[in-house]
Image (tube, rainbow, N blue to C red; front, side):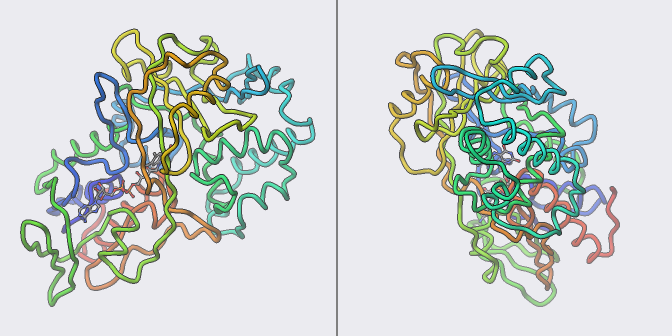
Length: 421
Ligand SMILES: Cc1cc2nc3c(=O)[nH]c(=O)nc-3n(C[C@H](O)[C@H](O)[C@H](O)COP(=O)(O)OP(=O)(O)OC[C@H]3O[C@@H](n4cnc5c(N)ncnc54)[C@H](O)[C@@H]3O)c2cc1C
């Protein structure tokens, strides 16, 4: 069979099918595997194509990598909480189970009334403890109205919850599915996200290496599929290098390419994200807060979060140097001086001598997931054509991996083969 696209969905699909001994050819338009999970070298700095975290609580991650693979991924965890700049000070809001030393400061931080804080804790714990299947299949509404109804209001909402979720969902209008947001919050409560020591690309890199070790597999980079045509006895793909025929084809591209190749699929609105990567001459935060995500509780500019990558994973920079990733929503050009000015407030120090390493602008970072959530969409489009990707599940690495595995399961049962796991 043929998989179109070597992002997380395509790789997860290929691995599962190839695990049965079936031949798998993966056609990838880019110069290597990973899709949206890629890392570049920028003058010795490791720069992901947009600030991105990997959450070890994603069930699909462990399912795909196994314990050995999780060890190879070697996730370097962020701190379990956030530092929020309000006025001239930074306050730590932390998960007291994982960062007990910050529990008191979380309670005392001037970030909303005790009632608002209690409402948020109840909402987050409700998300963490609910059965994910019930969340996925239950009633849904826009996130903003769900938070209103739960009593999550005031400064905690505008200064912490909104910017934090905006950075994760790519949406600061609260239009995203509340059910999806609850699944995301669940994964943050259950696991501490991190990054591999040398960039997020290690994740697809490990998957591609495993695939290459299986007999009968090939990953062909720089091969863009231009058209998918159903024909008697199989499916034909037109590529830049000619035609490829297969009994089954899984289109595991981004949503927008999939809709071009397979007319009739939904075309979600794209959510863009832009990350500014700066070198700071000194570590910009005290040791105790350096591994925390930093937020601007006063919302003085477009930055939704900022993090010292090298405090979490020193391998992101040459020895002794400091790399900071700061993300804004959208992919429209934002002037760097505006970002640096806001970062002075976020980090509580001058940024005039920070050097821009590079900017990663991703206009189609995430498909908008509006209510009602339709996770677990059927991959089988008939006549040997299947579709996978984050747009068929949830807009996340977890959604991409699960969707790829689901498509593999559908292919295997159609071909009369049994999945290995
Ligand atoms: C900046 C940013 C931050 C993110 N942060 C997080 C995060 O913190 N946590 C999280 O869980 N998720 C995050 N995500 C989302 C996550 O990265 C994606 O949901 C996931 O990687 C999607 O994987 P995919 O395989 O569905 O699609 P993709 O990664 O888009 O893979 C599709 C592949 O298909 C290839 N392709 C496209 N067209 C063709 C063609 N015609 N022929 C052949 N190949 C083709 C592409 O080159 C690509 O390799 C983030 C994404 C971005 C961009």
